[in-house]
Length: 358
Image: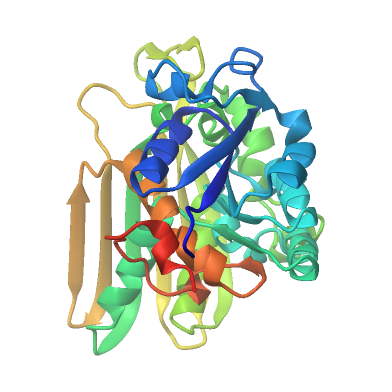
């Protein structure tokens, strides 16, 4: 492609600051943005970069379809909510308008196994309008492709075991709420843990009815099985609350999380496969205390055993860099709602992104 890639930003919160900075530095053209926050609507997009002006006004999210039809971007970047049900309207509008879309929505990473009904509806719509929808971000590298690459240097695998922790303060209110931050025990059990304490038959019904509250690792385990050509026979999830041992100030929640309230959770997903390889993946999202930091640890057990530890990864920046580096892959991909397990491995982009478009 000889011209710059035209980008439209959906959601102007914490993550968009890195997204748009990286997009500009990869020689992309930002042509529009929307948000639902009245405090942001009407402001120049340059406020996210502490610049005086970019000449682009943040519009109301209600104008999304109108703007996509008039501006015709090459790709939209959606950085708002964590669950597929919560970004349904935006994804439907993008697909309806035939706009390629990449999103940080964690469930979109492998939505086939947690919300197949909505996934297939969006998949059909995207195919009909010749566009591509992809979920990517931190998990694309550090919970996905990193593990599959390590598997390529392993002779026999009996178990894949992973754990990753992150500060919910870094990602906005939607992610914090998805982890129960600020919840009481009763609210956590009724809104989050309720999806765990049920039979497989009940869970399957919830999944088909779009009512299953999948933890991030539910989708990651599905992604890993798909990438490694494993066939899951059993799968389970357990979400465990993490309580505040002292009062914690949360800028994201705009509240003091009192001692005894929930500051986050650990979610452990386990799976057995037809190939006799077990997968166990844990994500720990919480409001950090002063001595805590992000970390990512994965082990492949078998012949030989391998463990990789990554301490203090810049999770927000890495998420956004993956999103930007993935843009050519999304534009070049087949149409539909595609998992990155079906895309080429992520690459560092030395040149302007438009030079990678076929």
